[in-house]
Structures are given as structure tokens and as C-alpha cells.
Amino acid sequence: MSRTQGILFGVLAVVALLVVGLSLRTRQPPVLPVDEDHRNLSDLEACMVCHGPDGGLPQSSDHPLGFDCLRCHGTP
Image (cartoon, rainbow, N blue to C red; front, side, top):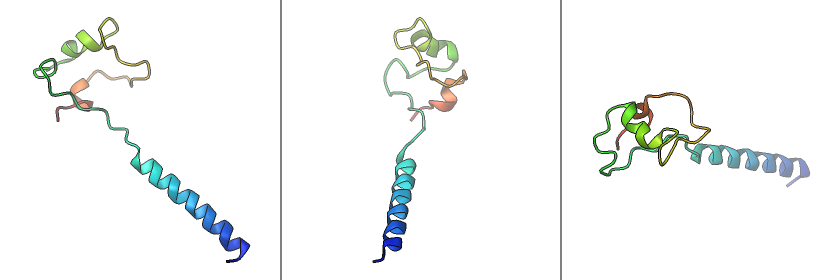
């Protein structure tokens, strides 16, 4: 194998690894757990009891804006 072919092979291998790595990453939000706390949720106010700023498990600071919780975090 010539030096040029080796470099080309290396570049293609790196690109292939990047493509595979990016395709394996998921940006899908987690679905609601199947438990008593989440069984009958129907609106934002119910979610914000726990996930609001004063709740026990508030949204992270990098949580996207939007208040339609069930649209993104739908039931399994």
C-alpha cells in the first residue's frame, strides 16, 4: 500500500468512526417511568409539582424551553 493510500484509508476510517458514533448517540428525551407518580399525569401543573423549580427533581438548567411535557416525554 502506498503512503497516499494509507493516508486516504486513515481519513476514511476516522470519518466512518465519526458517522457511527454520531448515529449511536440519541437525543430522544426519556419516556415517563411506569410508576404511581406518573401513571395519571395529564398536564403541566402535575409535572411541575416535582419537576418545577421548587420540586424535588427540578428540570436541569439546560432543559429546552417548552411546557408540553407529554409531547416529548410521552408514555411508553
